[in-house]
Length: 232
Image 1 (cartoon, helix red, strand yellow):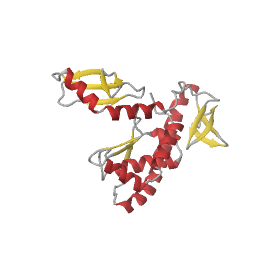
Image 2 (image 1 turned 180 degrees about the horizontal axis):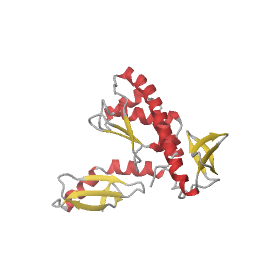
Image 3 (image 1 turned 90 degrees about the horizontal axis):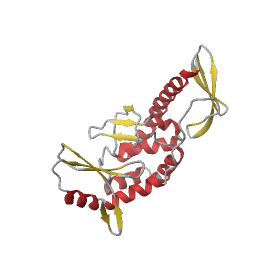
Image 4 (image 1 turned 135 degrees about the vertical axis):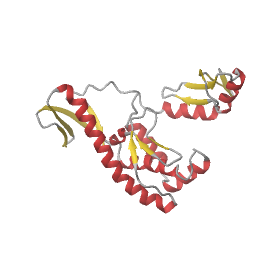
């Protein structure tokens, strides 16, 4: 148990063969500390307390997120969000498998009901690739005015706690669930990661750059996390 001011911060401790200590705030708000095997208890507690402000801020932001949605069943009548709007799922049987968007519905045609998840998920991922590629081009043109340059290449990966990531080498990865979000929210995620090309960490300088590139980034961030749930 650590303390930050008058607030007590419980944490789960995991020891591993490693040289550094890491602190992670899980989606449910719990704090996971991974420490070297020989790290002293008082040093671990001191480091958690040193990060107390950051931990409490992360917990407050996570508490604003909507509760988990019920498990998907991929059946007619379910509500699915696509490009920021809710659509009803309608499952049809046919040999020509595919997905169509018609008047607020996602029409999924499959040879058998058990193939619906595979067909729909494949289509959503393909749409994510196409739409994010289009938005990347627009975002690169905008970010270029602030000295941010990139090839525009990226990969997709389903991530539990992130909408996107950027490595020090400039490799960009985005969560395919972004296809559920409005395009202005996609732009926020893309520009957020592009800004890391100039300021890698979430430092004050980084947020100053992000604020210049996208002044209303916080409104878009809040909208994204209100509309779309990360997978659990």
